[in-house]
Image 1 (cartoon, one colour):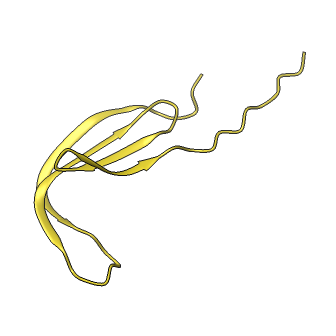
Image 2: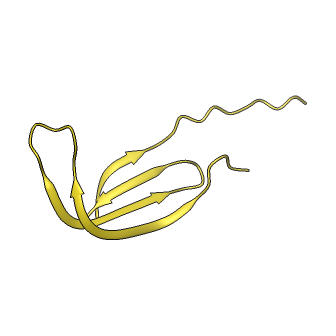
Length: 64
């Protein structure tokens, strides 16, 4: 059984701002987000992967 809830790929169009960078940048585009059942996360801007997250999963040992 997975410890993460899977969310299907979702897209939405609008204004995207990237905070805490030396210059202000606002993009009008498509933001896509997907979360898999193993906890991996993708964030895409206009179809290009911008952030990929892969969690460190510690496997629990089963007592036999």
